[in-house]
Image 1 (cartoon, rainbow, N blue to C red):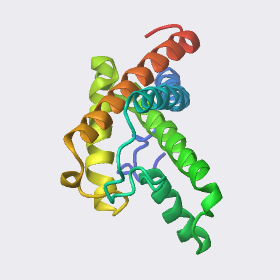
Image 2: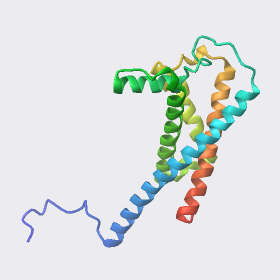
Image 3: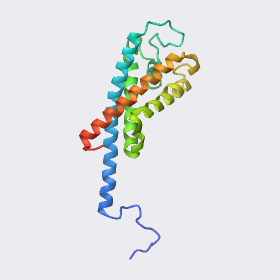
Image 4: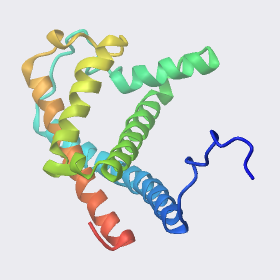
Amino acid sequence: MDRHPEYTHSHLPASSEEAENINAAGNRLWLGIAIGALAGLGGTIVMTQFQNAMSSLAKPKENNGNGENSGENATVRTADAVTKLVTGREVADDHKVFAGQMVHYSFGTAMGAVYGAMSEIRPASSAGMGLPFGTALWLAADEAALPALGLSGPPRSFPVRTHVYGFASHLVYGASTELFRKGLRRLLMGRE
């Protein structure tokens, strides 16, 4: 006999079928995170190739004082800030490009993992072929977080073409990430 009827086991699944459903949902979430991370890495690679192609089409511009063309872009500044926080020193000059690339690919992979998780929790979040995701990421990271953290100049300090370039790059990232996520999910889970 239970001496404390007020203490119920309502936090436990009512049946083994319910427990299996909870376990399956947890497994789908972890698989969604892994698929999203791989898709985010793929999306970052495609985005980088898009940026390289766009850069090769554009004529070299003069440095406008915000570090945009000196190798001191936001990813390098982020790598410097993290390295300084952890080690007390900045990234060595001959490692700055590599450190910036590590930040770029790590961030793209991490955001893909978040997108993969959200796509499992709320499938509607993957609607729009990844374009809303790319737009949200551009607004949150490029237009808000980087300037707020002092890792880039304020949005008004950049010409419109810089914003358009960043927006287009993130649309490419979002769409590519969704294509990879959808394909990997279909391959590994057998459905979409």
